[in-house]
Amino acid sequence: MKQINILQIISSKDAIGGAQEHTRILCSGLDKNKYRVIVVTRPGSIVPYYREQGFEVIPVELRHNPGSILKLLGIIKKYKIHIVHTHNMLADRRGCVAGWLG
Image 1 (spheres, rainbow, N blue to C red):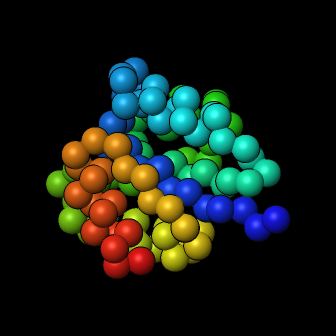
Image 2: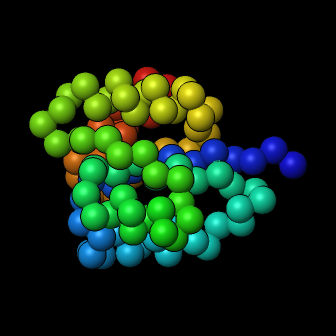
């Protein structure tokens, strides 16, 4: 069975918080044989936290960086993303545009 590639985008950079925990629980609950999850987040303590959980993490500075839309678009193309799931308003803005373009 072909894996479904999911891009989780969260704009938080700290490892502690509701959206961060929600994303961790959501990603942990997916069957790794069926789904490949890539998490894009801002550089910060959240990156090693998610990597310790076994997630594939790509740090991208989303704040004050309109070019991040192009980086997200590149990730969508490179990893052949099927689903873009965003968390937080900043991730929503960047991720929705990149997902729509991808």
